[in-house]
Structures are given as structure tokens and as C-alpha cells.
Image (cartoon, rainbow, N blue to C red; front, side, top):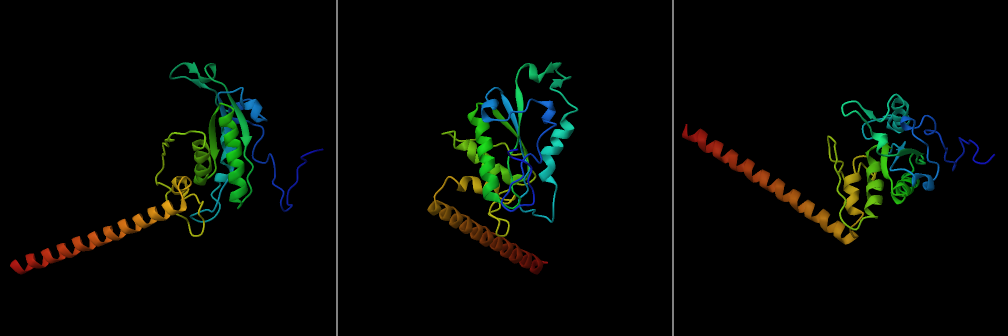
Length: 225
């Protein structure tokens, strides 16, 4: 038997652990990139958690499996509009991308490959993560295929623009910091950092001057009274 289940061996990446039946909403399962060409949309799971920034395991690694599990209770029918979305479009489940805990290089490379296969097949990808760090490889992969700017509508309580989280450049805190940097040279990157530092210094100096000015005004006010 080829591709037999193997675990607990160094260098071996387990397959089909978080994917398989049930598929998302019971959609047809696409096994190859060629299969994806027959559909308008393709669901892809990314069961990945990089460095957890507030403690231990956060469980986002099992999110794609959970989404698929709860989705089986639903269909494409929208009662408010009395239409079934699947009367107008087709969709499939393309499974999960291969991940390896702690290995950004392997995981991001596989993420890019699978996400790129969906785009190249002419389908629209719908992705379930996974932590915020998956934004960087997927958005940059899409940007490679478009000569003009790619817009991002980002709903979140924070911007994920930290340069790093400790030594981790690709943490969930940093995807939108990494994105513009992936399209600029090292010298331009240094210039951006220099300007940010100058702006920060100017802001701190202005804050100090305002504080000093208010303090002086308060002293004069007290003297008058």
C-alpha cells in the first residue's frame, strides 16, 4: 500500500489527519488541481498554529476540522431570499494543506502551492485557518498573479503589523507587516524603518514639548491666583 499511515517518525509529515469525510457542507471532494477546474469555488483548510502569542495551545489548529463538522447541518439555501446558492455556482472541498508544527518554511510553501493551484484552476479560494499568520503566504501568492494592486478587507480587532514577536518574524502578530516588505528591496526596507524611527522620535519630542508647555501654563495660572 502506498502512502500508508505513518506517525512518530522524524521527517514524516502525516497526511489526511485533519481532512477527509465530512467535507465542508458535504461538497464534492476535489483530489487534484485538475478536479478543481470543474468548480467555481474551492474550500481549503489550513490547520496551522505558529507561535502562540498569549500562552499555550489555542486550538485554532483544529478549526478546519470543526468548520467541516458543523457545516454538515447546512445547505446553500438562503430562506431570506428563497434561493439556493448552489443553483448558481459550484463548489468543492480541496482538503487541507500539509503542515508541520513549528516548520514555517514547509508549511508556508505547501500553503502557497495549494492556494496557487486553486487560483490557477480559475476557482475562487475559501480558506479556513489557522492563525493570522496564514494571511501573509496566501495574499502574497495571489499578488504574484496580479500586476496591479491587490486590495485587502481586513476585519480584526488589531492590525497584525508588529515587525516580529520576539525572534518570530512570521508570527500571527506580523502578517501585514511582512506583506509590503516582500515586495521591496532591503535598502528600501531600511529607509522605511529609518523614517518610522524619525517619526517616532519627532512624536515623542512633540509630546514632551506639549507636556512642558502645559506645565509652564499651569505654574503661571497658579501664580496669578
